[in-house]
Image 1 (spheres, rainbow, N blue to C red):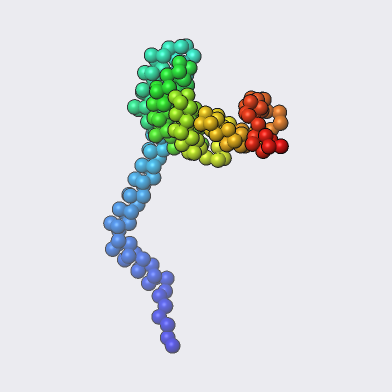
Image 2: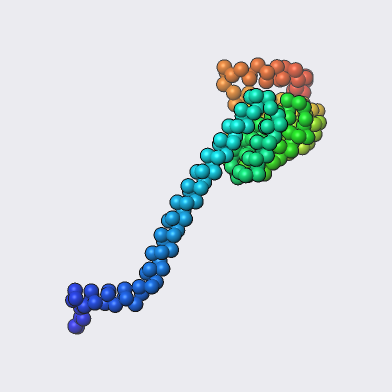
Length: 217
């Protein structure tokens, strides 16, 4: 059987013909590729610039907090929410606002700041932290059932001791003493023997009435 094999000259000629026939398509492809690379670099540079501006703005907020200038704090936090709504610094600013409101027992204001932070946060661990703080707010507002609902949003791997202790506080508020005991014991299991938090947890456990089993014995 005979085989037709192109020699190097014939192969080169075919390639040149293909390039001439497809020159426009090749040029368009190269141009699009360069534009995509340039666009990505521009986007990345813009992201870095935006994060830098947000970081500087947040630093100004911290300075205003330290200087006890609440009006400036509100103004700067508003700027972060408006100009950098997707930045983690805007979320951190809302959390700082919530902390300040909590020192004045302004629980509705605390809840509002936390709700905004929750809607803007993207990191799962931060969302767990926000849920934990929202649970504290609901407990402070005597809304124990709402507090439990918030605690259910906290991932099991996030803040296990704090979440279990707070769950115990909420359950105790609801009169569920045995469930509260179990929650406190769960919280203790996540602390090492030298933790300073153990004393308070052990005190809470000691203040609970004896369990039903111990009363029978």
